[in-house]
Image (tube, rainbow over all chains, first blue to last red; front, side):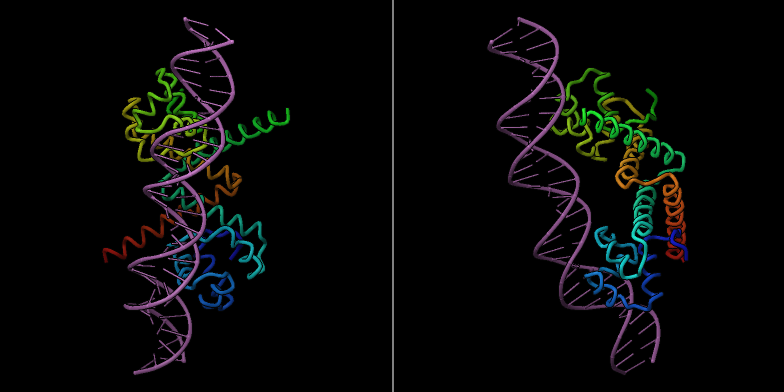
Length: 113
Length: 113
DNA sequence: ATTTGACTTGTCATTTTTTGACAAATTTAT
DNA sequence: ATAAATTTGTCAAAAAATGACAAGTCAAAT
């Protein structure tokens, strides 16, 4: 499995966990989480808290940035899925994101002036 | 201004409002909203509640589906912007959304079996 | 210069959503 | 059959979003 795979983040955690033959309870403890809730996370019934990415990276010796990429792409995928956003609309969304970046640039300039 | 423009949803509402020469107070009343909060919405400091899309469409005589598209692309753009998601990662996100759709299809099949 | 109207900003209580925790049920492996 | 692992349901607590109102700025009109 490469660092960028097309699964949910929950499934990815499960993959990492089973690969190292941890039980839910074991991994949950490391993550300072209840095993029941970790189960829900792996099954996509709850979100993994972004704050725990750091420790998750440490546990499995992963590059934090790559892990974060896994995470944010999952977050956005979830939103795309939930909103039933077509590819065409997604392109528009990307342009709108670009527009937001432009606005931000400009407002930063104003602040320093 | 076409139905699909590259602005924020807040700016779009402001455009619609000023086009019809409504004051914040007037439009807010129609939307059953406080004018102060509508101001925040237009200035991107609060989100527009999806539930109000229906009435917004009525007020400005817009196609609800197109308006909804404006809305969801804005929502996703916001997420892309906030997470600093690159175009490359966005493609991955789209694939992951596709994956979620696949999963969903399969789970529906199981239910009917 | 004061008043008026439109808009913005800050704050806070309320509501809604998310999370953590625990108990109970189900599944899996031995 | 038993034990361990996992899943599911529930509920209180924490966190985030929303509604409401007061106080502020700003511009135009008087």
